[in-house]
Image (cartoon, rainbow, N blue to C red; front, side, top):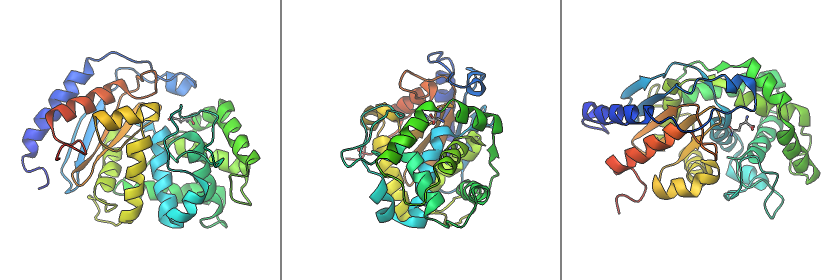
Length: 319
Ligand code: GLN
């Protein structure tokens, strides 16, 4: 086993879980009513090792929307189907140093990276326009959903239509980003702008739970082979690229501090979810809706800090 004394490890996870549960910091996202209604009490943690040992505690079966946690997944899919050279003709690999929805492009007039809204919208246009362009938006939706599901050991994902409709209504900034990129000819030719934006909102509105997301994180930790099904879902070079950008850009404008303190690739979303990858060991998903001012889950961050104090998972702990 990759974690030989799993029972012992679980005891620590339980302690860290209960310690973070009493943390009442942060505010639930309120830009759409469907997210504002989430209970601040919700708190779940799931762990899946690369050899398939699993542990879950708390609200691990309650569905939430993927939101920005979909960004590394659509990026992975684009790398897998189009290759890194094509993808990075359109989107950079540099942290933006700004908010995730900041109206800004890099000095090449490309989005900074695929982990912020502009970059993720662009990745959606690549997936929609370059990879199997004959597919309708409906077919593309199924295709992405089943790809995400394969990352999660074939667990079924959901879709929250109310969130999707709300996201689309409350999306002035995302449309502004979309138009700004169109002005600068960021998209591949033939991009259908409206379809591309809808596709992005749909990816944000897919639903999963902690249990399921921990398997996705474990597939990344395992170099692209799902530890539950043994299916090779991603090539190792795609996983390497995804993890690199999660490491440098996955936690909004806290990414540098997170890389310094925790030293693990991770991605957070506005629903309060966090995907955390301990390469070659395990995937973790934490979920708790209250967010700090930068948009990261307060309990999720506390859990990571605590974990790094107890275990040598930081990238440079082995030095
Ligand atoms: N739906 C959100 C948006 O596009 C996703 C961003 C996030 O999770 N931070 O603004």
